[in-house]
Length: 283
Image (cartoon, rainbow, N blue to C red):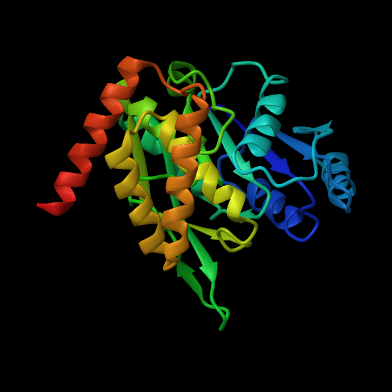
């Protein structure tokens, strides 16, 4: 299978070389690796250029953007800018963060999963992060049928069906909901153990918490599902303030009448799917 990788990098001099090496060591090589240098002020671009000099299938695009950390919006804007430079001669497309180390057979196994299931839409493994003792421990705070935004694989059929990535916080949830709306599957494989070099959420701030609530409104969750989802986030992270900040984000978005990310019909499907999953866990 042919596949392309888009790597979004903003000041990633500590990790980018390891990420690129892990991609270049894949048993199934990508046809193209496009690295988006997103307004970096460190040695990120120099690292990219060094790899480009030795690998003709690595490409670079420099992007100017805000230095502010804008969860969702910034990384998707960077991805989309890179994606626009690629053709559609691929079987699957990969959105990869610049602080990831993949097992060497990662994309070979991903391609096998796609080949064995005609309904495959979004695929990925599970993230492991180092604890204080240096041991790699599973850190996958969402549902086990969720693929982390740091390493998303989309079949071409799925990527086209969902209309690409939404430029908003919650993009890596709404993509999976829309995949299922289009009768495609989200497939995870726990044998694919991915090393995430930067701990989850270290760059998130209070604004990011508000944006999570905003995303729930824009995905048409409604009050009750958003309430339950906010509780879940707070419980998973062991921080009660996350519950209140997320709900505040939802309420503010509703007052401002922000545009929805999904259609009314898609929203109905999403709410039904959410309730089905909630009830499944309760009973």
